[in-house]
Image: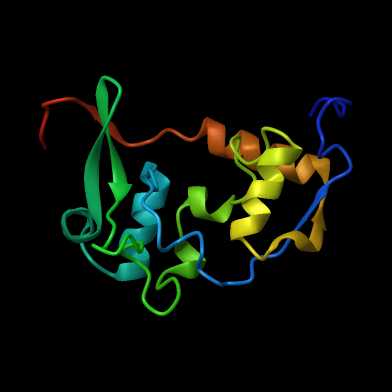
Length: 154
């Protein structure tokens, strides 16, 4: 891992501990894009065949020239896996596990503060080091999402 760039506001780490409030899983529309590892983890946690997990819990979302596989939302925008809390918390997708250490949330101190307005765990709790944060970013950016060319159906 490279040295700590001085221009990053999180060079000395950031505090975050999940409060399990579900604010990031509910109320607003969004996508939870899945990798093959994410999908297989859900298959195991839900104890269902892959096709059934895809049919019940996933949807294809147009994204540029491809479609990406994402978790569905309920009509009220809650994640399809939310049921009085995350029903697969220990097996949740990497995108969920690395929150709030995403490019969008770490774009600057202002973005971090905006995230703190919606998430009671941002800015509180466990101090995550620069290396932990950079590792979460790398992990999120390196994953290969499940996608298909537009119009190609399995």
